[in-house]
Image (cartoon, rainbow, N blue to C red; front, side, top):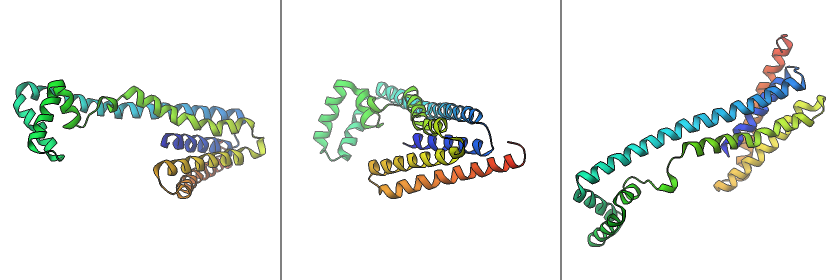
Amino acid sequence: MLGADDGVVSTASLVVGVAAASATKEATLVAGVAGLLAGALSMAAGEYVSVSSQRDVERADIARERRELTADPPGELGELTRIYQQRGLDAELARKVAEQLSARDRLAAHMRDELGLDEATRARPLQAATVSAASFASLAVLPIATLLVAPAPLRIVLVALVSLVGLGVLGALGGYLGGAPMGRAALRVTLGGGFAMAVTALIGKLLSVAGIG
């Protein structure tokens, strides 16, 4: 959801700013597509680096746990027993649970209950990068598509309007999924996106007046 918001705001702001500088439709389109690609790749790269760091930490924790299990099996069994006791089991039952889980897969038991790691939720950098890029690009196409069909006199207005509607829908959906007031969430992202577009439009207009656009 956040990636899609970023895609709409950044791409729409770029398109509006370039269009406000009196650029041609073709030049504005090139800028919008370049912004979409650059933003999606930037999101993917950032997510890949971040999740890779998380994966490295997970691997280091697992390697340390594996060494400890090899060096001191009784001590690790006692540690697992204490974890289950802290979760509400009595000492005897906690010991039995720890023994049974350890007999099946000692490392998996410690990964899950001591380290809080589960195979289904392990860090996956490539997957995270792909999802991040796709979420950014998914709605970044909205202002670009509007630019392609909008008549020249209404280009800036329609790009901004369609993008703001898209942001409002995303904000309301995010509020609904998060259990927050949908109106407030929609208003927040719409105002933020509108401000960003207004600033870039003003900068583009100033550059055009100065003869730079």
